[in-house]
Length: 473
View 1 (tube, rainbow, N blue to C red):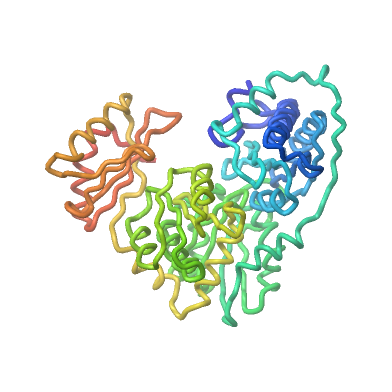
View 2 (cartoon, one colour):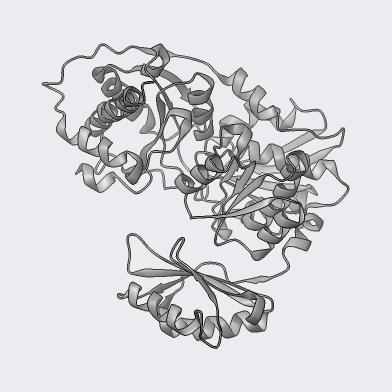
C-alpha cells in the first residue's frame, strides 16, 4: 500500500483509503531515520540536527495525520518543532531559520479536499524526491512495525515563528510610498492564514496597500473552486473582481500557498514565464551579472530579457527539485517556473508564494507602468500552451522528431535532451518546441512557440501526426 502513495516529489493519496494514520506514523519513522542519517553521514550532528520541523495545512485530515507523523518521528528519536497551521514556504523558512535536519509539510497542495500527503525537505530546505531520498524513506517506513519499534524518546515542542517569518517576507516588499490595490484569491487554502498575518487584514500592516480578500475562509477544509491557479476557470472569480474593484492586479494562490498566478488590471491572466522575465530584471538591477534560472518550457523572451539586463540565463528541468538545485549550484539570484513556483536566493533558494507576491507589488510600485504595460513587451511571441498527445511509443515519436527536424535536416534545428527533447529552429525558421514524456501515462506533452501565429499553427499541424492523438482536457 505504501508504494501507491509515494510519488516522484512527495507522498500523496486520498484519505483514509490510500493514506491513513498508521501510514503517517510509519512515514514519520522513515523520515526521521533518513534525515538524521543524512546529517550523521555529513558529520553535521549538533543538538539542532535532531530537530525536524512539522507544519500542516487546513485539510480536515491534517491534524490527525500530523499527530501520527510526529509520533513516528519521535519514536525514532527525532525532536519535533511543531509550527502548526502554516503555508509550505513557512516550513522551508523554519528549517533554515533554526538550522534543523529537515522538515515535513502535511499537505496535498492543489488536490481536492479528500487528498492529503507529505512534502519532505532536508537540511537547508532542499527537496526530498524519489531520487534524493524519498525511496529511502519508503523503504524505512515499510520495514518498521509500531508494536516492536523501540521508543527513541524524541520530544515535541510547539513553537510560534510567525514574527520572524513576517519580518523575512516583508524584507522583500517596498511600495516606494505608492498606493496599490490588489485582489487576492486564497482558494480557501493556506494563503487565507498567511496573507492576513504577513500583510495584515486587508493589507493593513503595509502603508499604502489595500487587499480585497476572496475565499480566505479555510476553516472547513473545503474549496469554492479547485485550489489550482494554473486552470484558467479557477481564475474567473478573481478576474471579475479585479475589474469590478478597479484593482491594480490580482493574485491567486494554490492550496498550500507555495505557488501563485497573477492577473493584470484588465483581468487578463499573466503567464508565469512572462512574469519571470519581468521579475528577473528587478533582481538583476540589484545583483548585476547574476544567474537567473527558468523552466525550459518558458518563452524565448525570458532568455532574451535576462541577457539584455546583463544576467546569465540558465534553462532548468521542470520541477522544483531541479530548479532549486540549479539556482543553488550557480549562485543564482532568482528563478521562475511555468507552474507558478518562484525561487529566491535570499529565501535559501526556495520557492515562496508570499515572497512572489511581495516582489510583484514592489516591481509595480517602483515604476509608473500598469501590470499589463510591464508584461506587454515580453509577451512578444505566440505560444501554444501545453498540449497533450496520447501515444504508446513515446520514445519512437521523440526519435522521429529528432530525425525530421534536427541538425542536417531542412529545418537544421538545434536539439537537446535536458528534459524530454527540445528542438530549436527559432533563429532560422521562427519556431521552437519542447516535448516531454508523462511519467505516469502514455502521453507526450508539447509546448511550442513561434514568432507568428501562422508559423505556430503550421508547426503544430506538422508535429501532431508524429506525436499521436491530441487529448484536450
